[in-house]
Image (cartoon, rainbow, N blue to C red; front, side, top):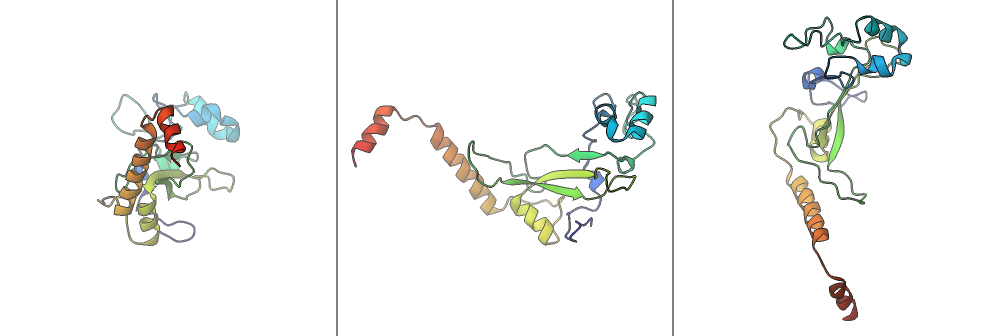
Length: 187
């Protein structure tokens, strides 16, 4: 299993197996990093520019799959952050209350702590993240649980989410000013 710098498990053998594509890759298979942030790595940006900013992993869009000469792990600026707002392990969906400071149900979980392919301290890390509910997040880091386990949401997680839904529904209920002020006059 892949490990964090402190030695706890991240819950996967291969973080790249959970990646559809790099966050910097456009729908046209071009590297957005090289175009927008080329000043951070001019050598990389110049190489991409010579190839019309084509992503070296994606390759030819006319072909099926990733046909480029690189793998995601080879790219020094690779990043893949999952944006789905549900737990990757148990499927619990986030339910946030507006204007509320309650602890979120979902937490961002890093699958990789690896530095870029060029290895320097200034290189951006290969950030690969998914969302886990805080209960699954604790299980993955504190036990042998895996992100890919077929798990059901923890009963406490369901109770917390449903409590938030109930409070939200109560806020949506209509109460006239007359009903609110009459209730205050009774006391």
